[in-house]
Length: 573
Image (cartoon, rainbow, N blue to C red; front, side, top):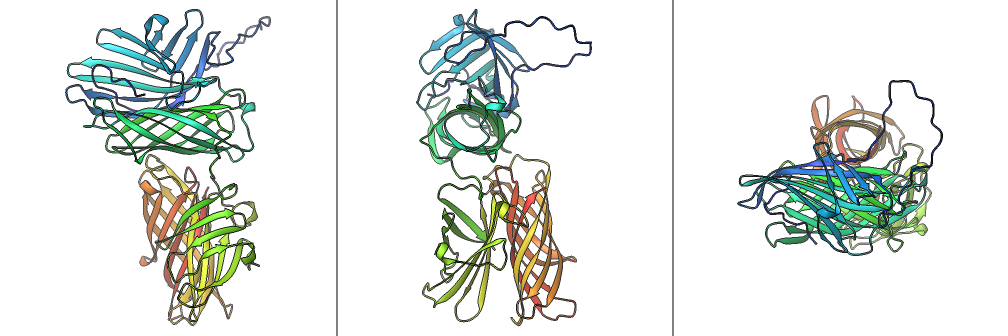
């Protein structure tokens, strides 16, 4: 099913999601004497059998804009979160919907069409027409929701060959009380997604599809993804696949049954970034609903809603390194070279090294060895990839409470060492749950991160090799898409145990929002001396990790340069 293309051709503009419903205020006059207690106002048990008048909790997003009726294309558009009230009158079986700009009631006499999927109301006044659509059954199939509903309210105004449109997408219903929202365990919800996308010069499109919403109640985070199909509102155009999808991730409120975070909508017309806001519905969080609004610098705007029901047949996805319950494939990058690590269980993983002369493969509990540093898990094995027998050691930095230095949740790093033909080679890489592509494109403001660094240093003639440790700090300006940072590094020579203070290095670079990457140069005292490559991790860039290399000296009197390669992980303050 697709949204109706009403008479002209218009819908466009943004308005992100926000909580609707009426709230009380605090008066300035003394409180009157309490009246005798009265019988509580009855409330509805489900949306499928409304018996009483009620003002529904909701979340809403708006797309506002102008369409050219002659060409059937959008002129402009903007999406943003907004507020909305939706009230049901049991006596008249009517709904009153109110936004910041207008309020309108829809009664049974205004119904223009009705079936098992939806009820459509229509009201016309001069050149203005309003449509209210209340969805009864998910467009992708399945049974009607009991506690949450999806709706959209479209206001059209015709002026000559143009049509101005305000399209409000919302979810509403009977929310889960704060005390009844689960605080432990995980769950998966099957979701149904519907919305509208506009791009200047292009035909406006509706989209719909199905997906999964995974939630970790204990850690208070969620992840959502749905593959959708887009439909032209003027022609018979349709498209799917190739990145046409909806993605979101964020956190649960510790106060009530709501959640919010970053959202990305991938269209035939491109990628757009924004936010999502929603809540759980039903006595025990059996259902959920949310709205989202996204946009980009090219004028693309998209809004939509999703509703879902808990589904025991679905398995929640992994979201953190500290609570993995199923196989997980991580693609990692170290010094700009890619590889992969597949986590199979707490004692088994496969690692694919970036070069064929580096032995990787499966590591199990039988390969585990005692680590010289309790903050690492260490493995050792031998192998031959066709370049001769090689002794390999792999160290993985421990996430979570087992680490006494910094307790990472989403990001970690590894240190691979291997030998063949004599010398030992070192390779550092970072891995984990990366911040989603384009999640940070709409983010503004600044954030600071602090962490640790590890590395290996070798001087110019290989006569000295250092184990390097230190601290890291980063300042990220999301508005400017730029960052600065420092690495304070010290070393211990592996044979003589001589100490070296390599000093403080400055990092300056850019944030590439489309894939949440940090790239920068490293200098000290104004002289270029290395590079840094990093990645954000977590749904909202809660952590970052990266690899680096620098050239320096072990001391002022040392004539030989030391090349240091290493990795750093840091958490937002």
